[in-house]
Length: 299
Image 1: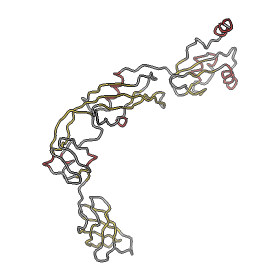
Image 2: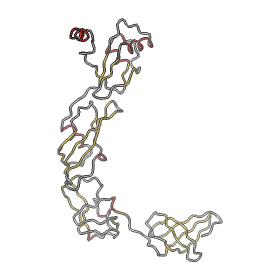
Image 3: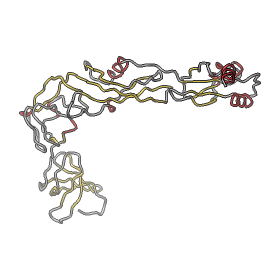
Image 4: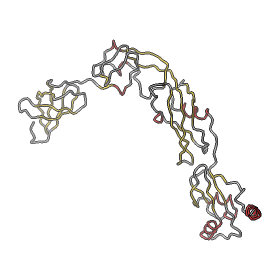
């Protein structure tokens, strides 16, 4: 049995042969020609197979090489198996940090606490902000950031890191507790520069972005104010009278209607004609409403 095994190893050129690197998502004629000069007559851009996944190999057996040769009118004297693989590299912490800094505020400090260790193909390391998970309540300074390595232009390998990100921010802060659904006045606000963990939401940085707006939920004193938390104050309250400009063809008329709910500038608001009792919808422009109706329709 030992003699047979040694004989096989001695006459199997693919056992110790190194695989050729392939950097595209397809193995092309020029790749095959580098592996075996007998295929130099192949068009350089002709596709002969798919590239292997990272960590695996793509082997062209003798029978497959003979078929490719026959298809392309190439005479092979002795087809020998050839092997291709995607080259891999080991990433360092600094590779992760450099990619992360591209999507972090200037001056933010990043500490890698743990990360994926799998070797990856050479390519672009990408950490999008939307890959940053919310910090756990028991340790708001630690976050999981999922990213990827883009290689061959179309393929990706996922990577991850557990990070601590700390930055300096200037934003509008609540100087006292803010109640939900209550317009915010200037006495409840201050602008402050502070240091803390990375904020996933865009924060208000100017008082004008907050004044008069309504928080959708309560906010504690000393907290930065996310823009997504704020909505406009209603310009019209339910039950209030609204001046309506009605346009019907060339005709123009004005009437007073009653708001059926709170409304904000630019919204479509349901209104009631107090004379006819009919309800209709019109677009608010400031505290007034504009309604365009087809000829012959009444409200």
